Image (cartoon, rainbow, N blue to C red; front, side, top):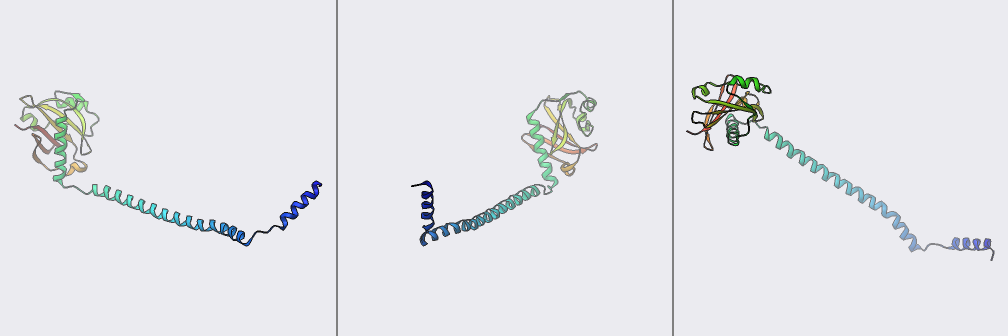
Length: 200
């Protein structure tokens, strides 16, 4: 058999072949199936998109409430109580001093990063307190000086000074006892003063 005749026979054979009706139905079903899965796929993406939007909105709402609820104005008493807790905690930690000084004038020269000039309040002289040194700190997020004094018995006392800005602008004059310490809060010479000392 010549190769040419063989090719013709193969062509004739396949040209006579027909797909059964059942086979055609199966192929048609397979062709339709991707369309169905495409619509199912679209439905899946739509549901996923709605879920993502819901999660985003819920997260944004939670953050919004957390931020703005945290910014609700606090009363002067609440701010003062927070400052008193900070002062007592800072006094008890007894961190290293940044500067050693014997007079307030020495601190004024040394503490150049403060946005105010540290002063010696009248009460420190009247109580016969001796200045030891100071360090930078903060009170309720406001730059402050933490000044260490020794009382006549040699007990450490901590004086905080800061400008009355932000929350500290609403602080109220008061006396407190916390963790075995007497904490006095007042304003003097344009600054907020917080003195922490052992209860006598």
